[in-house]
Length: 429
Image 1 (tube, rainbow, N blue to C red):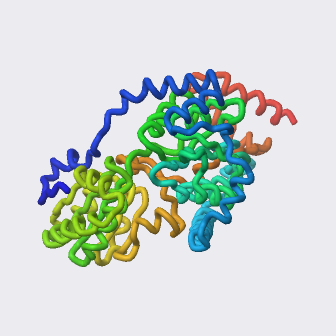
Image 2 (image 1 turned 180 degrees about the horizontal axis):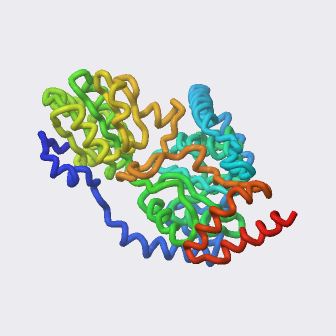
Image 3 (image 1 turned 90 degrees about the vertical axis):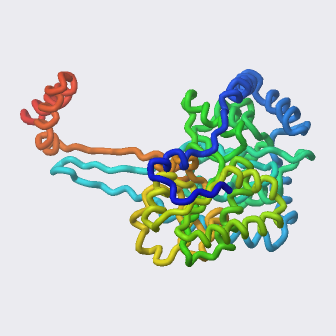
């Protein structure tokens, strides 16, 4: 971890830049995958799955028998954990539902807004080095609560052509019965453009490797929506001398183990704390099965010594972390000062892992500084907000003159006339 002591404020902008990868060289290959899937449909998916995953499939879809079998393939302990997480995530997201509220902006002018579910959504769930059934909960729960009529799940198969039982079990729990055994950019293409057996969706959700990330970004040119700009995982920990260095190190490593391109940052006012965190990182790193990923991520990471809690919060807001942990005394007093973060964890006993799995909040969050403008996935991500209005004859008389004057000032006579022609009829009644 790169260690920096009391950096000048003018240097902060450089420090908050993430390690960048040049994805432009991937775009040509992904565009070719897009064309292949558009032209050859299911055949292209079977061919590309054999090429990239080493699996020769006879069917793209997981059968109902395979989905049902997951119930007996998982331990009782894991099923109980998934059910508890499901309950908490459902409780948290259910309270986000917005009920239509009619408002009379002036006599006779009624306006309201209604949430309408997106007709068809696609969920991409990685299944390689880490089958992310937790992400399926994070996306599937709000999709179902929103009432999306159709949910398509794409996830890459194992070498034997199977889908991890935890993903199948979670899909069954959510009532998702369309599980497509396809991963990578080809899965994104299938959901975006559709094939003979896979319907095109209106919006695609879910994380993935660099090919999936770029493929989703490229869809903005085709009119297919995606959840949010997402890249490598990241966490920023703000720690004073009341923090537990072992806890801080554990939180940093929990994100570093995601991949070599992840970034973790610790800000502290205590030189001794920074030193003890570094010692803990080495001790805990040696015991991790994914220590090679985590060690490479630490090469991209920062330990920064600053002069005050206020300075740490200012730096954090500039960095706009995906995950922010406040391991400081009296954290309640500074909550209003947090303006840019995907999800915030308060105190020494709120590990970021809780949000990743089971506390209830969503772990699909903006990275790479996008938390300055984007929110994480929520119930709102799966609905459209449609506004309605009803104007009575009396209402038109009340608001008509305002519209006519404004339309005339903009030189849009047809807009003005759409009101004037109605007013004449109302006045003649």
